[in-house]
Image (spheres, helix red, strand yellow):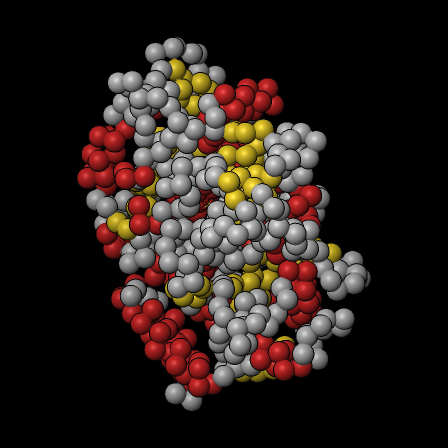
Length: 601
Ligand code: SAT
Ligand code: MN
C-alpha cells in the first residue's frame, strides 16, 4: 500500500483511517484537500474511467454527464439501517439491526472491498467553517465520483481538519462501492454491488457505514446519513434540531425580511420553493438552503437555522426556465448531471426541460432515444450536483455562522385529494401534530411504488435516526417553556391537489409566492383567516390571486375542507399513531381526539 503522510496530527483520525485501510485493503490512500486542482484531477480520472462524459463546453462549460448502473438509481430505504443498542430506540419507522451483528456483517463486506482501488479520505464540514453550529465528518470512499460530489456538497479539506485540531469530534463515514479489482475483475464506469447494499448507522457511537451503492444519499454520507440520521440523534442529545427542510429568505415590498423553513419529502419541490421567482410584484425570495436545516434556539428566544450543506443535489426532470429559472442558471456551467439524457449537440436534456422534445437523444441508459420511445429519456430521479454559490438567488446571508431567525415553518407533501392549499396550525402543539401526520404520494427519490400515499412525519420518515415517537415528544418539549410570540408559526401546504377530472388545481412554482405572502402577513397578524376544524385557512380575499388565471371553482376547491372526507381520514390517522405504541406522546393522541371532536366525530 502506498504510504502517504496524513495531513493531520489528530491521532484518533489517523488510527481510524489506518484501521479502515487494513480492513478494506486499498491500493493507495489519498487525503482530499478540496482544492480546484484536485477537483479537476479527479474529474479527469473519472473521464478516463468512462464514468464522466464532458459535455459540449460551448453549451455547458465545465460540466459532466454520468450514467449510473441502472440498478443503482435512488435511495434504498429497505437497505438502510439504524443499529441502536435497543430495537425500541430505532422505533417502528426504521429498519433495526443489532449493532454487533451489523458490525460482523460489515466486517465481512468491507474485508478487501477496496482492493485495486484508491481510498479517498475526505475531511468535511457540515455548516460554514467557524460556525458554532458546524460539525465535522470524515468520509472514506473508494469512489472518485463520491469524492467530487462531496467536494461540491460540503466544505472539504484543510478548514475541516483545522476545525478538528488534534482531538476534535468527527463523525466517521465509511463507504465502498463493493467491487474490489481482483482476480482479473475489470472496472466498470459505475461499479456497485446492488445485491449487497447496506447503509448502516450507529447512533450511539455516531458512525456510518455504507456498502454497495454509489448513488446520492446512499453514498454522499454527509447528506442524509450524517446531517439527518446521525445529526438528529446528536441534536436531540444537545438540544437542537436537524431537519429535512429548505430555508428561504422572503422580502416584502416594504423591505421587511422573514425566513421560512419548509419540510417536504424528497422530490416534492423543496429546491423549487427555495429558488422561487415570485409572480407577486415586489416580493423577493432568496435561497439559504434546499434540503437540510440545522436549527437552534438563540439567547433571544428565537429559532436560528443554518444550511449545513454547500451544494444542491436537485431533481432534474421538471426543472425548466419556467419552473425554476434560478436552478437553470445555477447549472449553466460547473455542474455534474447524473442519469440525464444527452443531446446530439452534447448537452443534457430531461423531461420537462424544454417545451420542444428533441428528435433524438442518448437516454440515461446510453441507448438511442426518440420521442416515440416508451421509456423516459432521463431517469425520473436524475439529478444535478452544483455548488450553492452558483444559484443567482443565493442569499448573501447563506453562510452566516449564526444562522437566520425562522419566522415560519411549513410542512407539506404531495396529495391529490383532501389537503387544502394551505392551513395554519392553531399553535405549536397543533403544528407538531400537523408535522407528525404529513402524508405524501411517493416519488422516484427512493426505490418503491411511485404514487402510493404514505405517512411521512416531518418529511423525516427515511431520515430520523431514532424512535419517531420520541422525536415527536422532543419537538413538543423543545418549545414547551418558550415565549410563544417568538416561536415560528406553523403551516401545512399542498401544491398538488387535483380536481375531480384529474387536472391540477394550483399552478405552483412562482405562484406559490401567493401562499408565501399570506404566510408572511399571518406572521405580522395582517392577513385574514377562516377558522376550520383542521386549522386556519385563508379567506379567498386574503389570498392574493391578482393576475392569476384560476377559476373561482378551482380556488374554492383548493381551499375546501370537506368534513366527510376529513372524517374518513381519522381512521388512517389513528392507524398511523397506533404504530408508535407507548412512545406516542399523549399530547398527540389528545390532538387527534380534539380534531375528531372539532369534526363532530
Ligand atoms: O439521494 S438523496 O437522499 O440525496 C436525495 C433525496 O432523496 O432527497
Ligand atoms: Mn431531501
